[in-house]
Length: 394
Image (cartoon, rainbow, N blue to C red; front, side, top):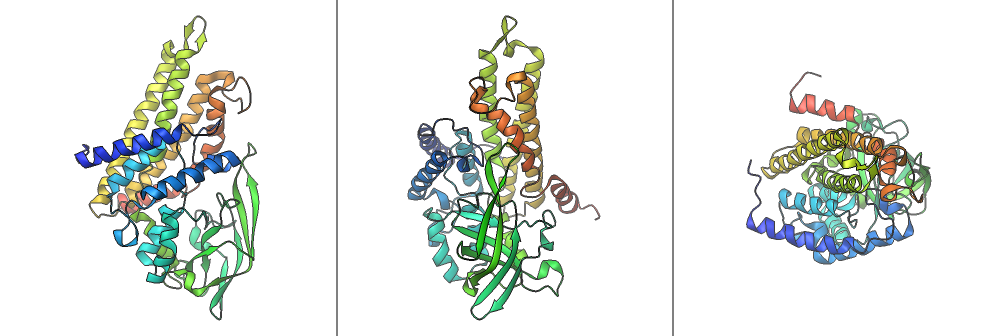
C-alpha cells in the first residue's frame, strides 16, 4: 500500500489540525481527554457539546455519508485522518455512537423515512445516543440476549434489562436490540430499534472502581416503540448491527491519543529529577518508553492498513479485530508502564497537588482494562482473527 497522502488529503489534514488545535485551547481545567472524559463533569460535557455544534456546522460529523443525506462522501482514509487528528488533540465533540454505529446502520438498512428523520439530526449533533446491546447474561455472546419486544398494534412493547450502557445518564436517545422471535435460532430472532428515552426507561448508575460515573444499567418496563422505529426488517437486527463495519474501524483515535500521552510522559521525565539527573536519562526508563513508541507506531501503521483495505471495498473484519485487540491490550500495557515510571507518584489521583498530569495515568490504569472487554472482548477478537482472517477451523 501507499502510505503517502494525496495533496487534497494533506490539505484536509492541515485544516483539521488548525481547527482542533484551536478547540483544544478551550478545554476546561483538568481536561485529560479519553473516551469517557465527557461524562465526568458538567464542564466537560458542556465542552463536548460546544465542539459538537462547531463540527456539525462544518459538516464533519457526516464526512463519509452520501451527499444526498448531508454527507461529503469522503473516503475511509480521510475519515481516519479526521479521527487521528482529533484524538491527538484530545478534543471531544463526536458522539460515541450516533455517527459511528447508528448512522451506518440506517444508511445501509433503514427505510427512506428513517433516513430523512434521523440522519439530519445526527449530522446536526441534536441527539445524544447510548447503546442498548449488552445484558447481564449476554456480554460477549450478544446473540443470547433476552430483552423481549412484543407487537401491540402499531408499537412494540419492550421489557428487559441492558447493562454497561456508556453515557446513558447523559443520553436522550437509545438504539438497542431486542428479541422478537424466541422460537428461532438466536441470531435470527433479534430486531434493531431506535428511540428517544422516555416513559418506560429507567437508567441507574454503575460506577467504576475509582468512583467515576460513565456506565449505567437500563431497565425497560413496558416501553413502547413505534414499528416505524425498526431499522431494517423485524428479526434481522443481528445483520443490521454488522452495518457498522462500513465505518472507519481502525482504532486510530486511541493510537493518536496515546501518542500524545507518550509525548507528555517523555516531557515529564525530562523535567523530573532523581538522584541528580532526569528520569529521561535512566536507560531502563528510556527502554520502556522506546518500547511503547514502537508499539504505537506499529499500531498506527496497522490502522492505516485497515482503512486502506476498507477503501478497496473489501471486508476488513479480521483486520479491524486485530486493531481492536492490539490497541486495547496495548493501552493496558501503556498505563501500567507509565505508573511504573512515575513510581510512588503514579497512583495519586486527580486533585492531589502531587499528581502528575492531573492524575492522567492513574485514571487510565483503572479504566483501561474495561477496553479489553467493551466493544468485543480480546477473546472474541482472537476468534474473529482465527476464523475469518486465518481460516482456522472452529
